[in-house]
Length: 515
Length: 119
Image 1 (cartoon, each protein chain N blue to C red):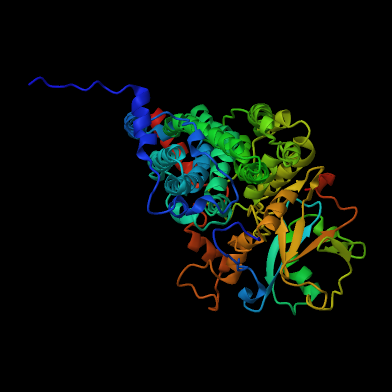
Image 2 (cartoon, rainbow over the protein chains, first blue to last red; image 1 turned 135 degrees about the horizontal axis):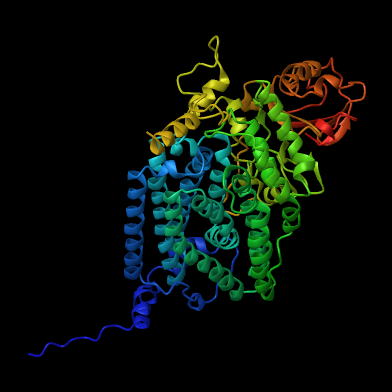
C-alpha cells in the first residue's frame, strides 16, 4: 500500500489551526459564565474575531526561539562569572545600581507574569489569550534570567543577599510593589492597558535604556546580555500593547472615556515609578549614556508624541499630566538622589556625593536647574562629610497615599516648594504628591485606603525584627527595623566611601592587574 | 462606585488612629529647606504639648540645618492642612486642632535655605 503523505501545513494555515482553531463557543454554559471578568469594567466588545493577532507566532515556534535565546544567554553568563567579569566594570559604585535592579525588577517581572497568566485564562477571544499566555511565560523567564545573571555579584558584594525578602518589606521598594499590585487587582482590560500599553509601549525604552545601555557602557556584560535576551520579547509585548488599545477603541465609541482614564492614570503611575530610573541614569552610572532629561525628550516627548498623534484619530488625548512631567524633567533625578543620599542609613545600597567632574556634567546637562538648586545642596553635604559629619536624615518620610513615594516632589513652577495635596475621606486625611495621584485616589478611594505604607506600618509596630520586644529596656526601633529588612547596618547601607564593597573591589582589581 | 470591582467591595482604611497604640500621626515639613527631602512622619501622643513637639522630635531632625538656630519664632508661620494658623505652644496637639494624620508646615520668612537655594 502506498503511504499517503500529507502535505506540510503552510505557515498561515498552521497559524490559524494552532490559534483560532483552539477556541470554541460553549453550548451548555453561557460564555459570560466561562469568562466572568469580561463585563465589570464597563468595556463593550462586540466582535472578538476582529482581534488581529499581533505576533503571528505559534507555541512551537515560540519554544524554539526562546530556547535558542536561553542557550546563548547562559553561555555568556557562565563566561562572565568564570572570568571574574565583575572586576571589569567601570567602578564599584556602578554595582549599587544593580542592587536596586535586583531588589525591584525581578519582582515586577514576576508580578507581570501573574497578571498575564490571569489574562491568558480570562480573556475571551483566543487571539489575546495566546498573546497573554506567551507574555506570561516571557515575564517569568525575565525574572529568572535577571536573578541568575545577578547572582554572581552576590558572591562578592554586599546588599544582594536577600532581595526577595527586601522587595516585600523595605520602605522604598513598596513603590514598585504597590504599582504592580495596583495593576494586578484591576480588571483584565485595565491591567492590559496599564502594563502592555502605558508601561511596555509608552515607557519601556526609558527603563531598558539606562539599565541595559548603562550596563554595556559600564562594562557589565552579564547584565547587558540578559537585557538583550529580553529585548526581542519586549518588541513583541509592545506590539501587543498597541494592538490591544486599537482593538478596544474600535469595538465601541463608549469605550473611549474609560480607556482615556486608564491611559491618564497609568502614564502617571509609570512616570512616578521611573523616578528611581532617572536618578540611576544621572547619579549611579560612573560612565553615563545620556541624561534623564535627554532620554525623556527623545523617548517620550518625540516618540511618545508620535504615538499619541497616531491615536488622536480614535479621540485619545495626551494625558494632562504631561505638562507637569515636562516641568519635572529638570528636577526629578536630583530630588531623588537627594532623598536616597540623605536616607542612606535605610538603604540596601550605598550612596555618595557626585565628584566635582560629575557635578560639572550635571550642570552642563541641566543648565536651568543644577547650579541654582542642587549644587548648593551637594556641596553642603560635602562640607559636612569633610568635617566628619556625613549627613543622614533618620526621620521617616511622609508618603504619598497612591504612588507611595516620599513627598519629595516640588511644585511644577517652584522647585523650592514641596507639593502638598490632601483630601478628607470618611473622616480621615489622605496626602498626595500631586494632583494626579490625588485624582486616582478620589476615583477609587476604596482601593487606596488599603495601601500598606511602610512609614505607618513601622509606627504601628508591624516592622520590628521578630523576637524583639519593643517594651524592653534599650530597645532600638531603628536597628530592629533594619534587622527586619535584613539590611546589615554599616555593611549594606550608608556611604560608598569607606565601604567594604569599595575596599574589596579595589583590592581585587589590584590583584588582577599586578603581581 | 468607589472602586471598580467584580463584586461589592468596601475598602477598610489601614491607617486609622486606633492602630497606633494611643498615639497619632503628624506630618511636619519646613518650607524651603529641602536638605530634608520630604516632610517627616511622626507618631506622638495627642496630649503632647505643641511646644514639646517642636522642641522634641521636630528639633531632633531639623537642628542639623544651620538655619534652625537662626529662626525668629515671633515671625515664624505655621500652616495646618495648608491654612495659616497660630498654635498655642502650651496646649496639646488635640487642643490645637491637630488630629491624626494632620499636615503641619513651618514657614520661616527670610530663611530660604542654604544660600537661598531652597536647600
